[in-house]
Length: 369
Image 1: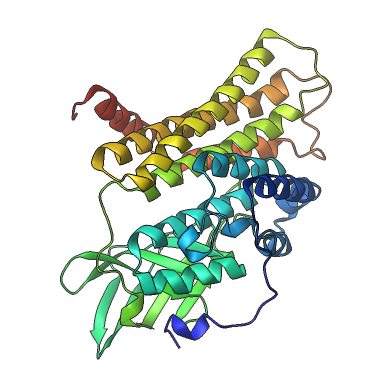
Image 2: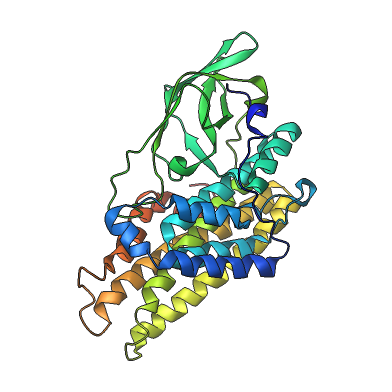
């Protein structure tokens, strides 16, 4: 086992093919409403949403970024950010899985060979799920005849527990260069460890990937793993903003029976402004994907980071306002409304905020600090 081609024809229920952006939005709203019904219970008991993710993928929503030349819809990025936000309103752990799935598909579009793209995009259209994992510096990719052997351990990464395919990155080859490989989770020598113990995003499928002398075929290895700025970097920030926007909206929705106040108005403006930032960043990313250059990609990353930093702040503000401004006992443990704050806060832990603001300053003012 271990070749990409061995898994391209495996059988599974056929996924629906979404034909328009309008259908994508309506599908997202329907699924979000369904996911919301048991989201609190899944959070409290850490019930992993395998069934919900199967429903999402079979709906065709997970394939809406597949390029037209690969028979996909390729929705606009501004709409993609809104779709992720809609799913997050129902369950942000599910939307975080979708974040990483779409990020992986963008890596395939920009880094994989044409042959590999054809195989993997076909699997995405069939309903397969994708994720990424960054390996530690100790990981190695050693030659083994015409193939390679991969050994090492990844850092904990969201969505791994649900993935059919994993893009393993940050691996050093025998030349000392960084590379990446595409793996089926069914590959011999690959182990997924469920080791997430965070207080938020409890069902986002975070796990650790362990490779033990895993055989990797040449066709599944990248020539190089891009370390410079890329559209995938911008998309990751944009979709991160989408999930945080969904958390903010879900928290704020619990304030609808509270008398209006200036603080609530400030929150409403913040949520609306965040949605506008995501829309603007999406347009810049659309342009960068078609007209890739250092300038266009840099602009897309700056705009997406601005949306992401703002969205997380608004999500935390909304979660706090839920307890400070609302009427009644919102702290009742049975309501589990603290999950909005826990989810927003644990997502902020992975962000190097000062570094990102420093990078934003360098971009905006045209200086290096």
